[in-house]
Structure formats: structure tokens, C-alpha cells
Amino acid sequence: MKKSVYLDSTILNYLFDERESIKQFIDITKVWWNTQRSRYRLFLSGETLAEINEGDYPNKKKVEDEAAKIEVLPRVIDVEHVAKAYVESLLMPQKVEGDAVHLAFASVYEMDFLLTWNCNHLANANKKQHIRIINGRLGLKVPEIITPMELFKENTP
Image (cartoon, rainbow, N blue to C red; front, side, top):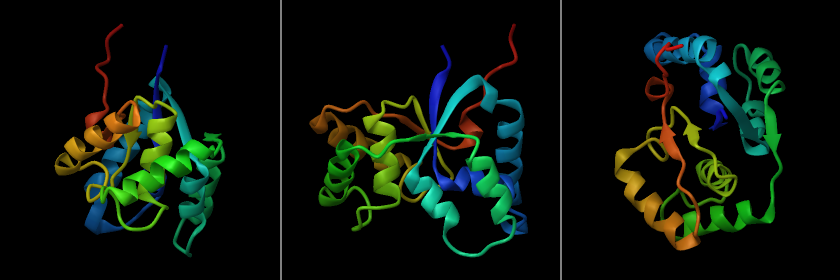
């Protein structure tokens, strides 16, 4: 069975981003998307869609079109409670949205991976121990929180 991957908005945005300052991350994201995504079951949330829909930026329509092809997880009450617990435990920024909600979705739905380029609050080695402690207290599985650079499989038969 394919492993599950929860996508935050950074992944889809980087697929169509053209900024030179993050070109390496964009290129890695595109390679992962084109060669690896079919090896996984992909999911996102309404939070991901809301972040994609915010603002006015180049290629927004392409990002929205790509997001429309991915299964959206329903927002259940457990996600709200878990996101609030992350904020109250000072694990995430002091608002129950964004990063706290992405991690809550990935944890509540027992995703194998949370794929992100957010290295401040999610794919951050300094945060992982704190996440393990909080999820342990909540009785939740801890998804592997990683960047596309870390989620490549070898091409073996």
C-alpha cells in the first residue's frame, strides 16, 4: 500500500513559483512532483486551499487547478482540538490556523508524511522533539515532517 502524504500550501505554490531566490527549492519540488508523487497517496485540507486562495500572486490559477486534483480531508472536531493544543503548548504560533492546523490534520488523519517547505514551524529539527511530546500526550501518531528533498525513493523494480 502506498504511504500517505499531507501537503501544505508551500508544495503546490513552489510548483509554479518563479522566484530566483528560491529556485533550488522550486526545482526540487518539481522533480519530486514529476517523479515521486505517484508513489504516494496525496491529501490536503481546506486550510491548504484557503492559503492557496489568499492573495494575488503569479500562477495562482495553476496552483488552484493542481490543488483541485488532490483529495481534501474533512475538517473534523478533533483537528480543532489538536490545533488548539499545539498553540496552547507554545508549539506553534499563537493562532489556531496555518501551521497548527496542518500539523493537526496530518496527526489526526495518521498521515505517514507532512510535506512542506516551512522550515520555521514544521520541518524543523528543533521542533520535532516538542511535537513528539505533545502528540504523545494527545495519543497521536507523529507524521514524518519533511521537505521534498527528503522523500525520494530509489528506482528499484
